Structures are given as C-alpha cells and as structure tokens.
Length: 257
Image (cartoon, rainbow, N blue to C red; front, side, top):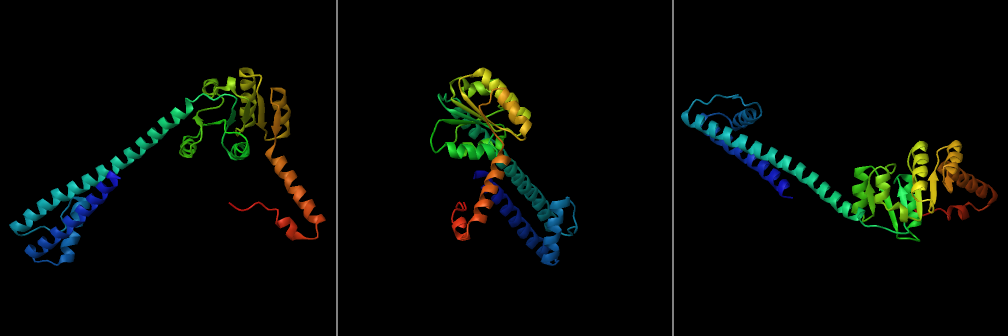
C-alpha cells in the first residue's frame, strides 16, 4: 500500500512540476503554453532542450525543472521497485506460513500427490468424509493458492523420498498418485509402497499398459479418468435413448458452479 502511494505521489509531483514550469517558461520566454509544456516533457524524456531559454529567468526555471523532474522520475521508479520487492516479500511470508502447515505431523491421513484435475476432484470427494489429508504439489503458484485457502500442503516433488517423509507417509492410511506422467506414477507407487506397505495406494493411469504396471508395483486401485468419463458419457447416452422424457434426464444434471 505504501509503495502504491509513493508511485501516485511521484506521478502527481511530476505532472505538477511540469505544468508549473511550463507556465513560468511560457510567461518569461513569451511563447505559447502548449510549446512550453511540450518542451518540458521533451526535456524530461530525452534530457534535451527543444526550446533554448533566452532569458536568465527562463534558464533558471529550466534548471530547477530539470532537477526536480528527474527527482520525481527517480522517486517513482524507486516506488515501483519497492512495490515489486514488497510483493515478493509477501510471497515469501506466505511460503513461511505454508512451512508451518507442512511441519504439522498428520497420522492416519490421506496424501494427495499432484493437484491437477484428477487430484482436485478426488480430494473434493474425499473431503466429505475426512479432514485428515495432505497435498503434495510442485507448482509454487498453485501451492500459494492452496495455502490461501487454508489447505494443508507441501511444496515439493512427490518423487522425492524426503518430501514423502515430511508428509509423514509412514503414518498415512491412503496415498493417491495423480501425477501427469505414467512413469512418475509408477515410480511413486514403488517408493511409497516400500516406505509404508500397510497403506492403501491408488493411482491414475493414462493408458491400459500403465494400469497393469501400476498394479504390479503395488497399487491397490488404478483408474483411467478417460475410461471412467467415457463410461459415464455412454451411460448417459443410453439412458437418454431409453427415456421418452428428456426433461427427466436434464433434471439430473449437476448445478453449474
């Protein structure tokens, strides 16, 4: 807030100095105000004099205008830089806040690895029955948004065993692997099953070949989102074909958010 006020103050001061200087230069040099104002702005932007003052008073005003105008520009630039630094500082503070959340040791909880579309909808459903969950997400911007929402989240790579240890994986009851790549999900299932063989492991697969591999390396539940979505779509089509009343189908649509 302070930096924004500084920027506004610097711009206001710059404009004020420009108009006052243009008025006096116009008066003493006997030129139009428009020519004088244009000359002042050219002087600030290029450090050059479009109009060379002919009177001692005009020269004095030009020098004062130049120094004060450049000071206003420097002040404004400093305020802009301060606002950028202030914004980064706020991000760091929020990151520290997230670090406090990360230090909380959960037990008998659910770990969601990857907060993409699959991870988000999986968690939204699980949250109806449990409040013990922890999200592992690598994207720092997404982590900050989750922290702002009050979610328990760890910023880091779920493939890193140290990150899984911070999530207290040895005390978890369920781990859900929703990473983008099949190879990452397979590796995560292998690592997590070694670290805690007693928990339930669910994973997302992008193709049928990955389904069998994920089961082999320790996943208890494997789902292909495309298959689930395709089956739901087909079921809806078949139901609509069997129904004579389309309004009955339409009424089953979930409300728009």
